[in-house]
Length: 148
Image (cartoon, rainbow, N blue to C red; front, side, top):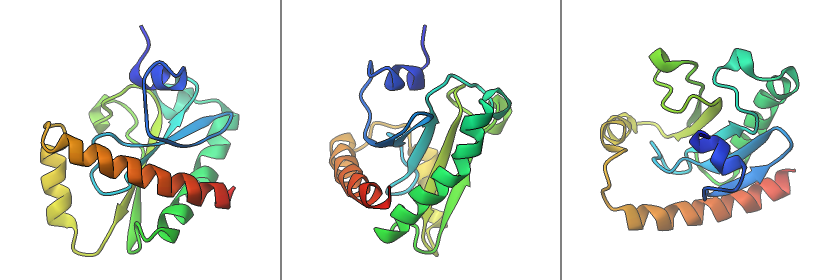
């Protein structure tokens, strides 16, 4: 059975996709830690960074940089962006399929970030979150179309 990211890559599960190329799909995290929390997901099933093809590994950070520029152009992450790659179960990797998180940050957001980290998987206000994700996805698609 496929993992969730393999199913998204094969269009068997929906996702708020904002960009795609031969190696990666860029989408919004459905349990975001901050607004416009983006995932860069490998198209190939690579549980760990060491399993990712050299071509995809070479592309990952340059794509991350371009996505970060689009986030900043939209005023997400104006004070910083966490680039986070959890590599293995002990590192808090929930889905064993390589993905890079881009988490936009603002000065003073630590209390909100901690609260969201503790409650992100609870089904609170899901409809409002879905609407926000749709809006953010549209903004990012437009910004990335200009960037690429």
